[in-house]
Length: 185
Length: 271
Image (spheres, helix red, strand yellow):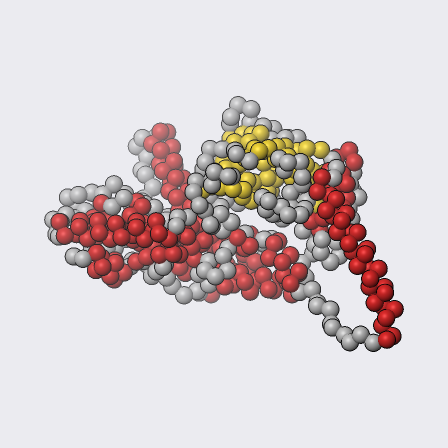
């Protein structure tokens, strides 16, 4: 602490960070899929945090740490967005609300089925299906044990399958509006 | 539909697959590494890069050197004993020895005696009360150390809590953000299995803050000397193997005596 950094040490740290930074596309996609208003900004902030806390980023697989950080940022983004809407409504009820994040283009049946799941179940499914994490990595990103995650994933798959079977084509977003925009975490 | 096919169906409709990096992303990389980074990997790299002494055959002419080496070992042992002796030393003695700066080029610090004092305390349920002591050195560095519930200093020898960070010793804080927050995060696990996150450092003095609050957990801590704080926040209730690699997940803000939010930390998610 307090020692000037030598160039070679700095280079080694930058090489290490470059490995972490290589996951920028994954984080940007994650933020986009979870309904972030500005996925680029979220991804950039995640990387800036990783740079400032590089020693905390696991060397073997930084993805769970990065996704966990991105999740916090997306949640904070949502909170800010909601507060802004509440402020607008409080001050000027007629004010037009800020547009919600663009809806992800899924088929309506699948979108409705996902919306019917709890946030926990949905996140477990999407971490594996869309973010391509192993159950162990997904568990790490959520801060739970691998065994707990596998149980959660198993139940989520079963519930989603049951929903899709029981309502094969009976619901669309037009007649059954889910109470979420994008994917809650 | 079987539950196995559910994942396949979801994978097939991934709405935003991960893309490769673009030229703009390389600019982003350059902008990020131009900012102050985490000092810990560089310090570790410095330790790893120390040259190993070359092994040499011992000849008759080196017998004198062997004798000198024996003397050096004795001196080294004395230094080690001194370091161990610091475990319950006075704060000033501890700061002047500057044990955390135990790397090449480190020098003993000259501490300004009247600045040695206890900045604040924090209590870990089931573990006890910790004291955060600070002082200024003559060249303006902040010296800091944490006294554990049993009266010993953290991170001296056989540390049971492994607080980590810059203690005990003198130096500059790793960074402070544009809003004036600067702190070290660390964790402690209590006997019950609960893991606690501790952040200790200083806050901007704008608006005369009296309290720091974590906006996520709601935990609060008083501010000592107008700017120093140590806040304890719950992290994991059960076994938490990722305690040191968890994302930040907290956001600090200063409050005035009326409970009004003054400034919010820009480091953490939620900026």
